[in-house]
Length: 118
Image (cartoon, rainbow, N blue to C red):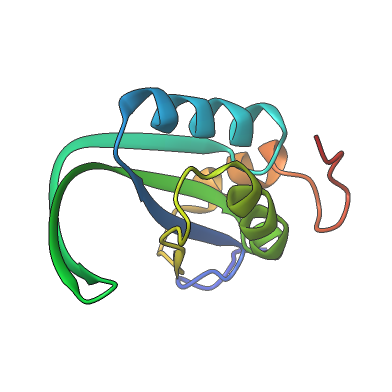
């Protein structure tokens, strides 16, 4: 049976880090531990934001984390444990995706609550 065009089975989670080594460590851990099917790392971001009353400008890398929607809460907990920032970005989007891609994501990420916490 075909899923509706807007599937709630997959989520795209966004976060940023300053160092490539941190981005790769996060990506590898999240995929290896089954919290994400894939993490894409995009360099070259320039983020401008206010932090503790001061204007900041930092070079960052954007991480696009593809996961099962049911795993988002577990992913958030694990990301907060691993992330080098005091307050990591954690933005969740519900993307349109093909049935085949969604099947692959669901094959890579276990059902919610079945993670072996590292």
